[in-house]
Amino acid sequence: MKTLKYMTLISVFTMMLSSCSNFNSIGGCPDAEIEWIDMVMINDIKYEHHFPEPADENIPIDFEIGRELGKVDYKMADSACSNHKMKNGDAAYLEKGTPIYEIKGYPTALVVAANDKVFVADTNLRAKTAGDLYPMNKLVKNIYIESTEDGSRIHTFSQPSKNKFLDAWYKLKLEDIQTLNKEGKMEGKRIFLEFELENGVLFRQLYWADSNTFHNGAIGNKEIKDVINHELSMLKK
Image (cartoon, rainbow, N blue to C red; front, side, top):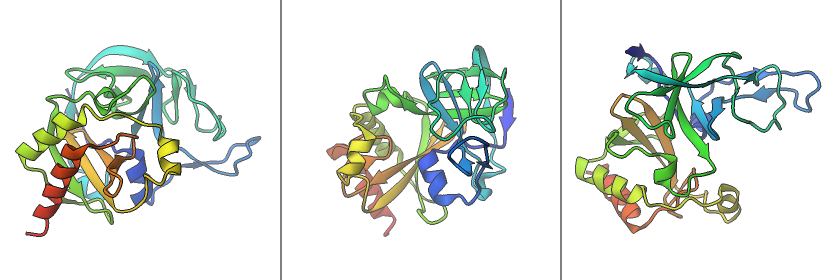
């Protein structure tokens, strides 16, 4: 069993709130500097890991690694240009030869571990629904609403609301993100939701209330909108 002082965070949220950046200047690339997200790709799924917010640095994550899924074949930092198309075995910062493991009790489609860090799924082209992208049935401990200013938790979903949200969440269809962006679906009032898994792993979802749309391309239904609005109303009491 390993205890880590890391949290896994979704990249959209992190890039908006974090002032920490990893820049690499590579000769021969059209980019003077490249900002990489800590990511790895295996089994046609891209996973991401991010450093915790300062307030969460001392919160441990406990997990047990299982079978080895593969190894890193290519370290992108210091080698790849920003137009590099990731393929299985690619990683931003993990060294070549680093083993990638499953986490016992958790689907590999959701999370993997490498170099004592947890990586959460970000892109899975085979996923058709939010439940396919995040197969976390019975694995969510809490859902939080966070401040869009500093990422601090400002509200915890009630357990009935959490269950209603997850029941609806698994069925949401995933749409093309670029198309949604062009259509203006990713504009307007933003809400940050944080999912806490039973093993302490955290990841975030950016939600646009006006269009009932999530940053991963999931389109909310009436149940999702009603639950979020209900929990937001609790903030005013």
